[in-house]
Image (tube, rainbow, N blue to C red; front, side, top):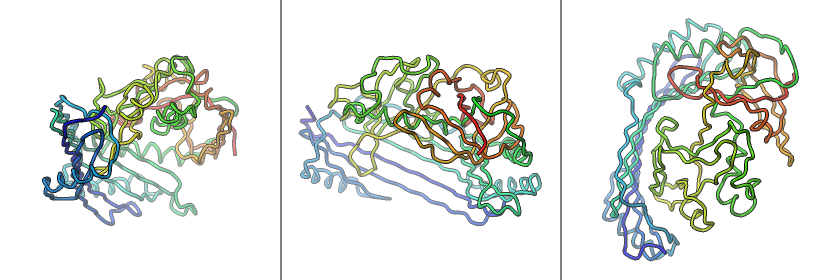
Amino acid sequence: MGVKQMVTEKYLKKKRTVALHIQQTALVSVRKRELSQTGIRVYANGRIGVAGALGICDERELAARARENLGLKLPYPYEPSSGVVMAVDSRRGEMIPEEGFVAEIEEFLSELRRAQPDFLFFNQIKEEWSETRLVNEKGLDLWSQNEYIAFNLLFKEKGSPNICDGVAGYAGKRYDRAEVLKLVNRVCNAYKNPVPLKKTGTRPVFFLESDAPVGWIINELSGLNFAAGGSLFAKKRGKKVFNSKFSLAQTLHPEDTAGPFFDAEGVVNEGYRYPLIKDGVILCPYTDKKTAAQYNLPLTGSAVADYDGVPTLGRYGFKISSSGRTVKELLGGEEGILIVISGVAGINTGGNFSLPVQLAFAFDGEELIGRLPPLKVTGNAFTIFNKAYRGVSTDKPTPLGGDHFFVTELKVEKL
C-alpha cells in the first residue's frame, strides 16, 4: 500500500484574534494577533515528508524541503484523500465587527457595572476568525472559514477573600448585548440569593454540555486503546452498554465547533459527524487512517496535525444526541441542581466517583433559583449514562447558542 507516484499536498492555517483583558469590570488592554501557517506534505513510496513555515513563504522552497525530508523515512502507507472539493463558510455575520469590537465591549462593561455593582468581573473577552485549507494534486480541495466570540468572565463579590467566586461565560458565533447581559445577570442574581439544599440523596443534576462527564467514555473510545485491548469497551463493540436514549458522535459540524469540517487527513464525514455510540450500542472507536488500517476499524476522520507535522490520531468534538425534550420536561416537575464549578472527580476501578462542587445553583428548568452551599456529588460512571441518564435538552442557557444542558441523576450531599 501507499502512494507510488509522488503527491504534493498543501495545508494552510490562518487565524486572527482580538483579545480584550478585563480587570475590575473594565478594559485594561487589547491584544491583536495574526498567525499564518503553511505546511507542505509530500507522499511517495509509503512515506511522508513534511516542511512548514510561518507567515509569507516560498512554497516551492517548502516543497523542496518536504521532498528532502522523505529521506527521514517516516512511514505513511495510506492513500491521501482525493476527489473532494468543498468550501464551507460558517461565519454568520452576527458577531461584532472588528473595528467596533473595543467600543462595543466598553459599552457592555459599562452596563454590567450598573447592573451588578456588587461584583468585580475579570479575565478575557475575545473574537477570533480562522481559515483552514487542505489541497492536493489528487483533486482534494477543502476550505473552511470560521469565527466565534467568547466571554470568559470570572467574577467575585466585592470584599470577598476568594480569588474567584464564580463564572459567567458564553461562546458562540452570535452576539447580542442584551442577551449576554441577561445571561450574566441571571447567574449573578442567583449567586446573591443563597438557598439551602432542600433534599439530599439522588437528585437530577445538570451540567453544561461541554462540561458533561463523558471524558472517561471518550478515553475508552480511542482507537488505540480499543484495539490494544486496554479499553473497557474493547470486547463490547456491537453490544448495548448504555441507556437506549444515549448516542454519541464524533463531530466536526459547523454548528458544534469553531474549527474546520474536515480532519487533518482530509476526511469529511457525511453530515460532518460520525456515530460512535447509537441508542446505547457501541459501534466503533474514533480513528485516523493509520489506526483504521492497522486494526481493521472504520475510519472516522480523527487525525490531527500541526501545520508542519505528520497526521496522527487525536480528538475533535463529541456530540451527545438530543433527547427532544426541554430542561423542564427532563426535570418532570422536580427541582434540579446545576453544577457550575467543581473539582476533579476521582474514579476507582469499579467506576465509582466523587465530585466536590464549589458552585451550584438550584434550578427549576427555567430560572436559577439561588446559590446552593458547597456540595459533594457521587455516582457511578456507567450508571449516569444508563438507568440514571435523563438526556440532553433541546434548550440552552441563551438563545444565542452554545451548550445545551446534560441531565443525569447523582447522589448529592453537603460538604
